[in-house]
Image (cartoon, rainbow over all chains, first blue to last red; front, side):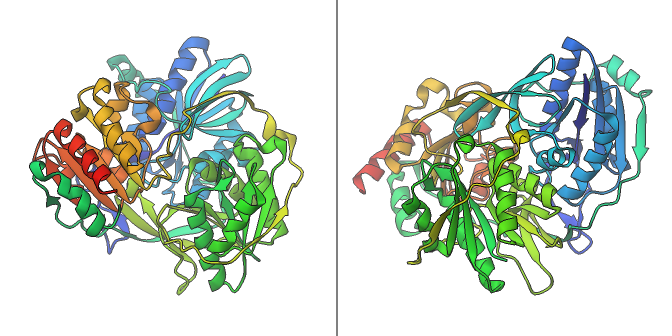
Amino acid sequence: MKILVCITNVPDTSAKISFTDNNTKLNKAGVQYMIGPYDDYALARAVELKEKSGGSITVLNVGEADSDPQIRKALAIGADDAIRVNCDPQDSYFTAAQIAAVAKEGNYDLILMGRESIDFNSGVVHGLVGEMLGIPSFSPVMKLDIEGNIAKFAREIEGGKEHLEAPLPLVLGCQEPIAEWKIPNMRGIMTARTKPLKVVEPVEVNDLASLTAYSLPAPKGACKMIPADQAETLISLLKTEAKVL
Amino acid sequence: MSVLIFVELDNGSIKKTSLEAVAYGAAVAQTQSTTATVLAIGNADSNELAKAGAYGASKVLHANEAALSNENAMAYASVLAAAVQQESSKIVILPKSGLSDAMGARVAAKLGASIVSGVTELPDLSNGFQVKRSIYTGKAFATVEVKGDIKILGIKKNAIEAQEGSGTATVESFNPSLPDGDFTAKVINQEKASGELSLTEADIIVSGGRGMKGPEHWQPLLDLAEALGAATGCSKPVSDLDWRPHHEHIGQTGIKVAPNLYIACGISGAIQHLAGVNSSKVIVAINKDPEAPFFKAADYGIVGDVFDVLPRLTKAVKESK
């Protein structure tokens, strides 16, 4: 089985977000980067599936050279080789078109990624890729097993989950608890250095959307403290002052 | 040229967040001097669907073939794409949700359309077609110029104040042919908690963290939620510990919510949790640690023992009715 795992290179979930260059660029000073947490779950499950039934894992990132440490980490966790599409993606359609172009060449049985990236939170890339390749896509997938040519999986639906079976190939957007995150071991880190990382240039895509500026939410006012022994007054404040009850 | 709005149904009625999408679509339609058409998929009573008229739609297309009874995003996308073509729509509005994102994505790829998800305000038409969207899980916004001939927008809850008017909409049956390829997956079964209020739809959410000390101590929180008619949520550690089901997990890697009122009980306020709740209108934090970071993100705070404070709040809610 050939698995393609798409990963994003994103600011750590605890990062404080601010902008520079007249609010047109993320201020990267002091920001730690990580593999998108949902992508990391997808990768972990791919490694488990490979351990169980063999096959190969290619990791794909649509991004610039500063993604390479995250790609090497994915290789250390268990991917066999990597492809980076060299560009700074700003739009879901553009990103999906890059993934679809790589996927068409590689003929993968399974294309896994996170349910969404945690920088733009769009949650649309898996659907776009699926349609571009003419194959089904599902998200958010929280359980996945492969039996022969059939994927048996569960996706989260409102207030519960749905169990499904579908023939491969598929595109799946993943989330916990599909697998536990994996931490690379020393041997993995050593071998990752020599695993192939191919850098390719992006395919041309119609310009459908572009970022013009960033902004931050208005700062929150001070928190009104209510003594615990007068907790009841909160309810009347919520009615008369905040008007939410 | 009609603006097309997809609405999600819950037990045959249009969901509240979807009515917001209708109001949003109707407001956009006005700027384009056109009408707003709604697409509903699944079982629903025509009278319920006609209610979209009160939010500005003039027509509702209703697709209710038996094959569409499961929320199958691929088949739903085929229906939506057919509706876009029938109505020659250039602008498509969906309420931001997992289902709508999946549908919008597939329709965008089918039609070569622009797609922007997480839109928080009406478009700015003064210089092209620009929308503001939420990014970094609510920590920031981006302004995006949308350039495609067809534009698909996924709008976040509270992007617009939906006012109920007096209009009515006509309801037409709409059942385009569906490709077999949309039905290759077999639904084996669904596990669904019945009668639970949905977190993404809820106006009020009462949420618990590790400060609740264990699943057996959840009753005071459930009591307050019941008194308020609120949905219940929890922090990531609580769902990781299996104290509460996974679908209650609110935060950066869980559900993002935007209720009018969010009451956090014994949740310290890690940045990852705050990311999931920062779109709430009013936030209340209850925590025994006065240094808990949640107080910096809250509008009202009570420093105290949740097991003392919660019953008092429940009592006050009941007495105020």
